[in-house]
Every structure is written in C-alpha cells, then in structure tokens.
Amino acid sequence: MTYGTHRPAAGESVPLRRSCSSVTAATTCPAKRERLQGSPLQGPRYRELLSQQYPVAALLTGVLLVTGGCSHEEAGSAAAESDKVVNVAVAKVARADLSQGLRKVAGYVKHIDVDVGDRVKKGQTLAVLEVPELQDELNQVAASVRQSEQEVDQAQHQLKRAQADYTVAHLTCTRLQGVMKTRPELIAQQDVDDAQGKDEAAEAQVEGAKAGLAAAQEHLHAASANRERVQALFNYTKITAPFEGVVTRRYADTGAMLAAGTTSEQQALPLVKLSQNGLLRLDIPVPEADVPGVRLGKKVSVEVQALSKAFEGTVARFADKVDDATRTMITEVDVSNPQLEIVPGMYAYVSFPVMEKKDVLAVPIQAVSREGNKAIAYRVNSENRVEVRPVTVGIETRSQIEVLSGLSEGDRVVVGNTSQLRQGQIVAPKIVELSEAEGGS
Image 1 (tube, helix red, strand yellow):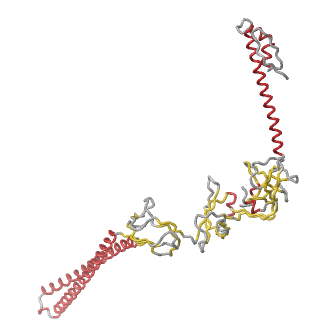
Image 2 (cartoon, helix red, strand yellow; image 1 turned 45 degrees about the horizontal axis):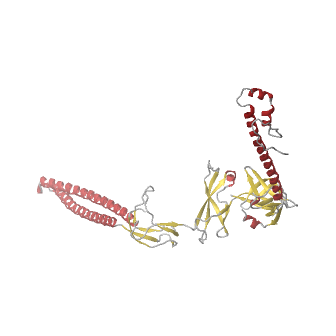
C-alpha cells in the first residue's frame, strides 16, 4: 500500500489513493463543488489547499497503523508474561475447630522518697510538703482549743461555787422557816424573807453557772472541730500511697511548688503517677452480633504477644448499650497480674468465645481477599495455574477463617500478596505451615 507525498504546484491535478474519506469527499462530491463555485477558494489555489491535506491524511493513517502494531506487540508480551512461572506460597484447605473471639493543699515539696519504677505499699509515704502558713494556722487553732478548755474549767468552778452558795442559803432559809413555825416570837418575819430571797438568788446563780458551763463546752467543741479540720489539711502535706502499685512517672522534685488540687478544672501539678498493676482492665468493643453472648463472670483468654503467654480474664462489666457510630458494645475484662508480668500499655488479643464450630473447612486468613461484600481466594490447580475462586466465609479467628463454599478440602490456596497474580497464570507453589502463613502480608 503506497501513499503519495508529492506536493503539486498550482494548477496540477493530484490523483488521490486510499486517503481518508473526508479528503476524498471534498474532491469528488458534486454538491460541494457547486457550493464552491464563485468562492475565492477555487481554481489553482483551491487545488493547492486540497493537495496540502493529503499528506496529513497519510500521516494519520500511518499513526493508526503504528498504534495497531503496538497493540499486537503488547498482546504478545502479555501472553509471554502469563507463561512466566512465579513462585508463590500456598496452604492446603483443611478441617479445624474454630472459636470466634471477640492533693488537697498547696505547698513546696520538702522531700520526695520515691522515683520511677519504685514499688510501694498501701499507706507508704511518697513525699512531704512544706506549708508554713498551714502550720501557723494549726498552732492558732490548737491555742483556741486550750483557751476553750480553760473556759470550761472556769465555768465548772463557778458552778461549784454557785452550788455551795445555794446550799448555805437554802439551809439558812430552811432553818429560819422552821424556827418561825415553832417559836415565831424569837425571829422577825423580815429575817425570814431575807433568807428566802437569798435562797432563790443562789438557785438562780446555779442555773446561770450551768448555762455558762454548757456554752463553754460548745465553744470547746467548735474549737476542737476547727482543729481537726486544720489537722486534716495538714495531714495532706504527708502524701501516702492510696494502694499498692508501681510509680510510673514523677512530675515534681524537691522544692517544687504544688498547687492545691481541690477541683478537676484546676490544672494542678501532680506529684507522681501511681499504677496498680496487680489487676488490669481491658476495654473490648464487642460487635453488635455478638452482644447476646456477653455475660458477667464469663471467662476469656487474653494473649499478650510481647510475653508469648496467655492469661485468663473475667468479664467484669459491660455498657449494655450499642454505640450508634461503631455498632459495638464496650465490655470490660479484668485480668489478674500478681507477678506483674503484664505492663500497662502492652497490646493484647482477647479471645471472646461467643461462637464455636467443630470440624469446619478453614484456611489462613491471609488466603482470602475481600472486595466490598465479596470474598475471593486464589486456588492453585493440578496444573499449577491460578484460579480465582469466589468463596463464602463464616466465622473468623485471628489466624483462620471458615470457608462455607468455593473451596474443597485439600485445595491449595495462595497466601500472602496476590496483587500480581492473574487467572490462568502458572506458578510454582510451595506448601507452608500455618505458622508461616500467619506471618504473610
């Protein structure tokens, strides 16, 4: 197939061969020739313009041919790549038993006796604060208590004196009244009246002394209560451990000023951070579908990978409400840690036995790829070619997943990275153990 590249001179006719349809129509269509009559684009100049379009058409056709040739080359290259053998790790579909798991006062630090990592007992002194004004207030209220005690003693003495005066006055009055009844001529009535008045006055003084004693005792009680209040505040200068634990952080040193942490809104500098590691608590978001299986006191397995050890936990409490955003319910599990092996902050896997199945088809969890709501597995057939199989999955553990349909027992499935694999690709399978498959990406 040949194409012309000659550019004709003005007035020279050009034979068009296998040019694009648009150029051919421009030179042979009678209707277009009629419309061009009388137009400046006619004669030699018009033919020259037409001749200039021809090489462009040939160039476009050549580009299309080159492009078509590239597509054939790519197809050949893709076919070659599909025949290339790729090494992949596979695992056999097998049967298994699966279990689905789900400060009170402000002051300066006088001395601090603990540091990070120290283990302390309940009631052990951690630090002592120095609060001079509080010590002065304590001395002042102690003096007030002593003064009140002296006032009570004075009131008691006054009551005793009043009682003694009343006793004498009452006896005198009683005697005169007796004489008045037996020998009225021996005593004047005025003396009897005076004695009776003194008797009543002495009685009133006794009642007044009793009231004074009661008031002095109330003052003593008030002073004692105020002393206890100030003493309680002063006791806070001696900071003790509220429970047995480990000091995980130290915020202050000797001489540092610590503000009174009496409200949660005030940003008071703490002294130390104490962690109770003997009993740890885990917060677990349990999926909505598994909420009915949560029960208080239920035993769960807590595996700490950093220690390569599993511990037994107990469901202590749960929210009893599903979160609207995550569709999960927060469940708290208490884990006993008497040897302090678990350090707060470590990652742990909790196996929450809400569903259990025996003798089911299972594959490593890395063998199943998810695309939206669909799950697929890459099966290696007897010819070592890859087959992309849609599968239906069931319950899932941390390392395995149940296969309900799509695979058969004994099938070989690819584990790990499958992004470079295609349907029908030849691979060199290598059986790996489950422990190796768990480490795949």
